[in-house]
Image (cartoon, rainbow, N blue to C red):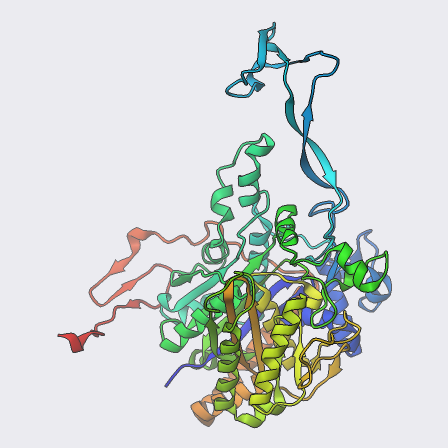
Length: 632
C-alpha cells in the first residue's frame, strides 16, 4: 500500500502577501471576495505592511491613533493595493531611474602637459605601471606624473530599462521580526515562510517530531541564484571591486543550500533527511518530487518543502534583461502605443507581451503521509500523488523550450485520469500555468495544453497564471502556483489574467478557458502545477483537492479511523483559527532557534538495534533486512 502524501500546511510570502490561510491568493482576487473575507484581507495586509499594529488590545495606525478594523480599507486601501503585487521597483532595492554603475573613462594629456596628481603611497596600484613616475612626498604621500593616457572608472548612474518587479509588500521587513544578524533577504524570508507554514498546520511542532522517528522528518529546499544580496554572494563578488573587504559570512550565506540549512538549524531542529536540488523555474517542484517520493517509499513521514529567492539586484535584473527575457520600458511602450508604462501590467501571460517580470518570495509546504496526518488530526489541504520531471533532450539554445514538458504534463493528466477517472479531469480540473509572459512561452505552453486537451477530450480547460500578479520568483515560482491552487480549492474563485486585454492571437486557446476577469467556479477536483524552466527543467505536479482527498482517505482507512480523525481535527482547526487571527493582527512570533536546543553528542545512545537522540522521544531504528539477499 503506497502512502499518499497530503498537504497539511502552507506558508510563505510574495508580492501578494502572506501565504497561510490564502491571504496572498485573496489579495489577487480581492474584488471577488465577500465583505468578511475582504475585510480580513485588508487587516492582514495592513499589519504585514506595518501600517497598523495591535497595542494594548487596540488597533492603532503609525501615529498611534486608534482605528477600527472596518475602517482600514477606507483609510489605507489605496496604499495597500498600490504596495502589493507587481509595481515599480522601490528604492529599498535600488533606484531604477538612477542605477549605480562604474563608468570607464580615458584621461588624455592636453597641450603637451602631463597628468599629475598626489595620493597616499598605500593607494598606489600594484605593480605601479611603467609609464608612471612616482616621487615620494612627506606624510606618506606621493606625487605621480603620467605622460600616457590613464584609464579610470568613476561612479555614475544609468536609466534602467527594466523598472518593475513583484516585490514583497511595501513596509514588510522580516529583518525586524527576529534577530536576523545581517542575514540575506532570501534567508529572512525563509524564516518567515517556514514559521508561517508550521503555525498554519495548527499542530505543535514538537508533538509532530515526537510522533515519528527523528530520521523520518525531511527538509527539501533550494534557491536558484543563491543569496545575491550584499550579505551573500552579491557582496562576496562586489566587495573587492568596490574597495571593500569580503566578510567571513558572505560565502557561506550565499549558497543556494542555505534555505534548507536555515530551516533545519534555526526553525525545525531537524536531524532527518536534508535535501537540496535546483531546477531553474521548476525548483520548488523538484524538491516537492523528492519529498513525495520519500513519503511514498516510507523513508519520510513529515516533509518541509520550500524554496526562496530574493534576487532583485541590478546585476540579476541586467543579466535577465540582456538575454531579452524581461519586459522592458521600450517593449511595453511599443505594445501599448504609449509613452507612459503601466508597471502594474508588465507581466501578461498568454497576452501580447514582451518578457517576464522578476519577483521575490519564499514558499513552504508541510506534507505528511496519510496515516500520520489522520492520527494527528491534521487539516488536509490537498494531496500530491506524484510530481513528474523530464528534460528536453538535445538542444541548440539552452534556454529554449523542448519536448520535456509534453512528457510531464501528459504523465500528470494520465495519472489523474487513472486515479479519479476521465470525467473528473475533463470537467473538474484546471491548470496553474507556468505562464512566464514571454512571446515564445505563450505559444509553446498553450500548444501543449491544446494537444493534451484534444487527446483527453477536454473542452474549456481552465487556465490560471499567478505570474501576472506576483511576477516570476524563479525558485519558488511553482510554490506560488501551488498556493493559488489551494486558494481555488478553498474559495471557488478562478483567477483570471486581468493584466491582459485579450488572449493573443497566436495562443492555442480553442480548447482552453483563459479569461481576463476572475470568476466563480464549481468545486474543482484536480490542479496541475506546471513549470517550464530554463535549461530544460520541466516539471508538473498533480494536486488533488481536499474534498476528494478526504474521500480517498475514508475509502482506505474506514469509518472508525475517520471518526477519530474528525474529533482530533476539531482542536487543530481551533489552533489554526487562533494563529490566523494572530497573524492578521501582525503577531507572528517567528521561530528562530539560534543555539536553542542544541544536541549534546555525548548523550547520544547507540545500540545495535537503534539510536536515541536527546530531545526526541522515539529512537532511530536500524534496518535489519538485506535488500540484496537475492545476491547471496
